[in-house]
Image (cartoon, rainbow, N blue to C red; front, side):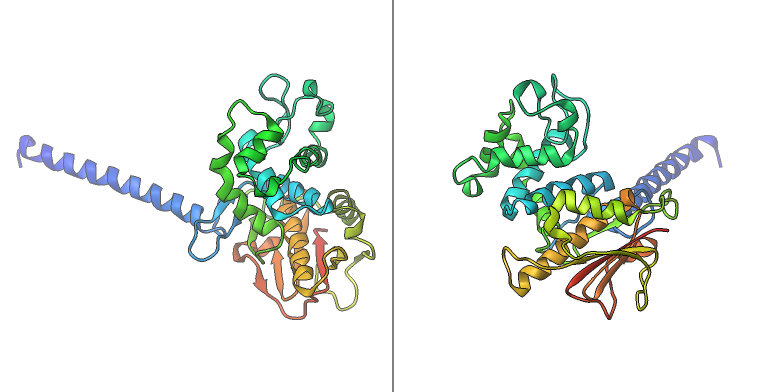
Length: 309
């Protein structure tokens, strides 16, 4: 075959090879994007109802989001307040607790010490910054009925007041999971590099964080112990009673259980949490690829959080 005749053929083969590379890359992206239990980097996935698009974020983003929700829970605020706060933090910092920003802005909500939000050190504390956001939000009459962008702007006074709206759908999806309204909707996968490498957890630290974020009412009768007869959870355990004295009702109690269970999963990598169980469902770091699994024998009256040894 002449060189002239083979040149078009080589060109077609090269184009075919390039197309295959693109398709394989796209397939790999879609696999990681849509399969929350696949291999790859550490990530957390919020599943949507029906066939809706899942929301994938990093563990640090999920942990910050769950702290924002817990602070709202401690103040007895509705899910709408959480949605507004999450959308605001998504816009301001992408749910990362950053120590830089426009002028002297720092933290999840990019609050400014020079504008009376507190010291930079205070604002870098997610519990403090979320609390300050809610303090201002609840002062707005009828904030829960306002368009999200209007409510957020009245708190933030941003130079880009319409920017918050684009985050509303994902903020609402995340809020539904973190408030416990949607059961077993948040799953976090440690990732290839982190799997099996997390530091041992400390149940005392877990209890302290729960109380600091949710308030003292979250652990009125909780206790930590090493294993225990009849317990299948590995390592030291924190038992969180599920009760809702302010709201009451079986449905609200179940929602409270999932609120705490999702908080524990969101903070699992940070706090060395190995296993979370509630009711008849269980999440385990070592089997996170499977998400929340059915597990008989669980009590609907408590969330059991086991830390890694």
